[in-house]
Image 1 (tube, rainbow, N blue to C red):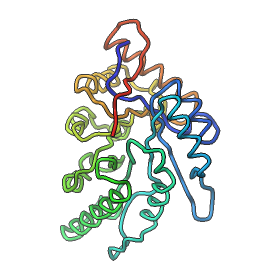
Image 2 (image 1 turned 90 degrees about the horizontal axis):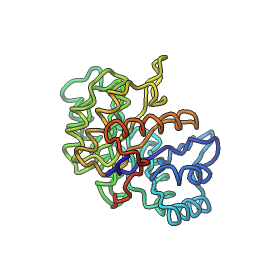
Image 3 (image 1 turned 30 degrees about the horizontal axis):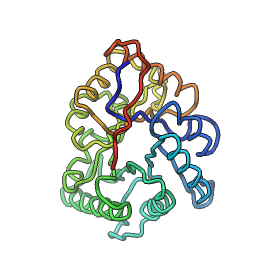
Image 4 (image 1 turned 180 degrees about the vertical axis):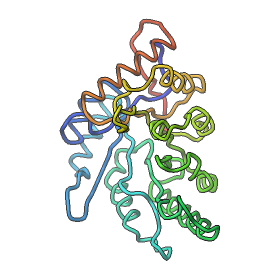
Length: 278
């Protein structure tokens, strides 16, 4: 198959092991690993230790793997505009412990649950202002707006966060699986977002309705349309197969390669170009 302009990625939850083991497993299969991190106050945490970060960095240096990082909580300020909301404190903790990995992007959700279904114009304006400020704060911590990729979420209108994103030079993370889940055609939204897209998430919808499932559940014509658009527009960010587990990953890789073969039937093995840089 033909070379891709983008970096093909996977999550840090493919094999049932810690981050470093997943990095070793994925390094010869994909170009990027998305670190899916959590840090519960009264529960488990998978934030990497300095030793683990050093090992992840060695994998990156020796095998050409890059990293993206998914922030753990939907970002927001406190009810009265406090800049010490737990979502920001957790984000800062994750950013500090992964900084040495020089991530290509930090993927962020915005918390719009209180206003997405009903809100006055005043409430909406206040929420947008608070959300923009939260993005500004996180952008300062990671060293630039362009590293922060704001993701569209399921159950929200596709362009719900756009008025906030348009205020700031942040990047986009287009989750195609979320759009499929809500029965939206992803192509117009993806096409509009690509000039600022740093990350694209791709995952299938199981017959049960569960997302983040294998791409084998995706009709070939739907998958081909997305891949073809990325190729045609010369998208050079990260395309993350956002599935969890070895079986779904293997099936998704096979579906991706089959899609590439249908689009460009060359008979060569797919390899993503490693040209995306900060």
